[in-house]
Length: 122
Picture 1 (cartoon, helix red, strand yellow):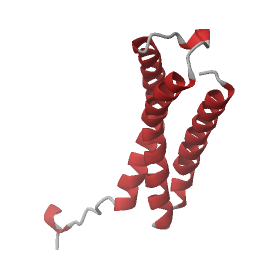
Picture 2 (cartoon, helix red, strand yellow):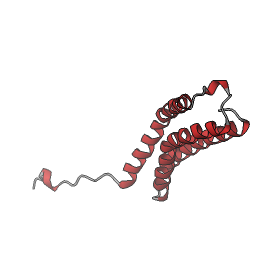
Picture 3 (cartoon, one colour):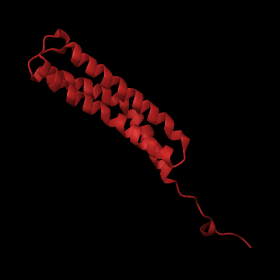
Picture 4 (tube, helix red, strand yellow):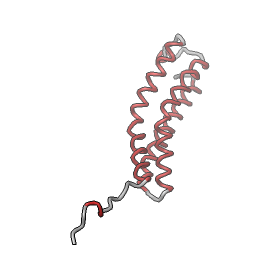
């Protein structure tokens, strides 16, 4: 007896596989969002009438420019951490790498931003 093409079952992609793909997409977007956030920071300083390289802006200007910049950069970092942790919780250890990359990148910029605010520079 001959099998027809309709009898063959094609396995569907698992939800973990889709989450892993999204986690890696978030990791790939981290450099893109870094440059977008960098440009946003310069635009905010310019709108407020200061140049970030002069280091003469008051604290409130640094704060107003840093918070949105940091928020934009953290979008793909948080997405990589959340999606990577969901993959790990489902039992697939491949989610550890995007989780770690998102954590390190987000933590690094958050620390650099806070140190820049506290030290008076931007």
